[in-house]
Image (cartoon, rainbow, N blue to C red):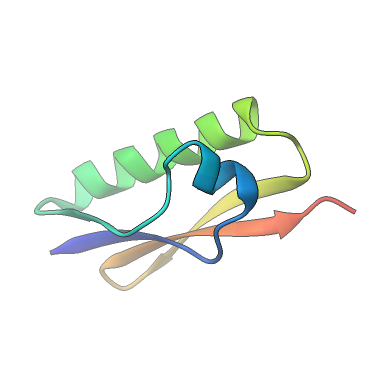
Amino acid sequence: MYQINLSKECGCVKKNGYGGIREFDSKDDALEEAQRLVQEMNDKFCKKHRFTLAEQGSNFLIQVIDNR
């Protein structure tokens, strides 16, 4: 089982329903979805944060970083 997690949930994540853990049977499916989410969040959210992707074993962590 492969998971996508967020390091924290900013207001845009909560407002747009992106929170919570997502689980996949395939690593490729999880990676593809995680990359899609990162791209979409960076393109469409308010720009107070940026989002990056890190692989941690069988998990993918979407990190929320303040734009200061």
